[in-house]
Image (cartoon, rainbow, N blue to C red; front, side, top):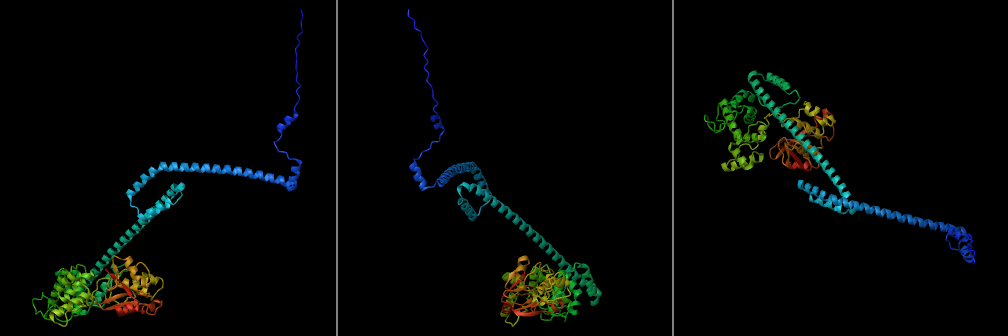
Length: 521
């Protein structure tokens, strides 16, 4: 038996470390240049410049990469914001439409403002239209709230002014009643005292006691004669009998104009229809007391027909005065054709009656201003000259006095206005602004007019001047005005720096380049 011995064959490969492959794995993949290429590039570009250029190129490449990624990020952010804004707008659009519908039902928008607002919103970029629309809405809302508060403030101011005017009106009424009371006291004292000097002292004492505030009541125009004053008790008696006790001073003014209190027919009422005792011819009555009674009875009828119950109601009182002179047929004629008395229609009536009767005259077309010269009805002392001792008019209350503007036309107009009406304007203004200011701030009492009236204020249009109208007969305008020397004076100088002057309407307009009047309503 042949036995073979098996031997284990070991094949061993001797592994050799391949250093080249290992090293090559750690080497950067670069391109190699041949000597010739290197030499050629070196000749074109020095080695140090080549390195700088390579670094710069890499930096630009990196900056471009970063910028591109930044733009991409910003773009994605904007897209996200736009998407959110559009989603929000879609959600809130129904709510806004509902609110807009409610607002439109509550108020009416002005078409112009609505169109402008719409155009402004539509002109905005769509992405931001909602936000800007909200800003505009808030701005409009704030503006409306401010306007509303402003209107509320104006309304409150108007109410304050109205209450103030009501207070002034009530105060004026009290003063009128006080003036009437003083006149009655005067009448009573006249009948009791028998001495004019005693009466004057007592009345002055009463005035001082009643008007402690400094407001004075002055007689107007020309004083009553002693002959008229002696009839005062009799006038009072028959005024009470015919229920017009508040018109005693009006009857005195009529008597003063008719006769001055002289003669047997002091009221000149012989031709009156109520005269049934004596001939209806001029001076037919020979009993003074009968004349007073018939004259007052007839005047009471004229007052009733003219619907005059207030001795301070100038319009209806003037109508009654002219009716007393013409006959009460004039009163119905004036009311029917003109609504009341005017000096123009008084002249027209006289001319018509002259033509009808074939006479050269009929009554006195200027009877009302003639009687008014003697009529003292409280504060309306239109016919007086300035009383420079009246400190309320010329000193304490006069704002121009407080500024030292004595002698200026505005100073004079303010003082005369205060003396006539018993109150002064609450503002100061240039002469040519007076009429507009008076009408603006006292529209319940004065109106603009191109035709004057007694007690009116006039302003020059081209010349800075203001004055007061104290008489007007339809042609001639009698005014009082100050600042004749054209400068500011001392108070003593100012007391003589004024005049009473008669103009026609044409000459007054020519003197001051046109005039406008603030006429008492």
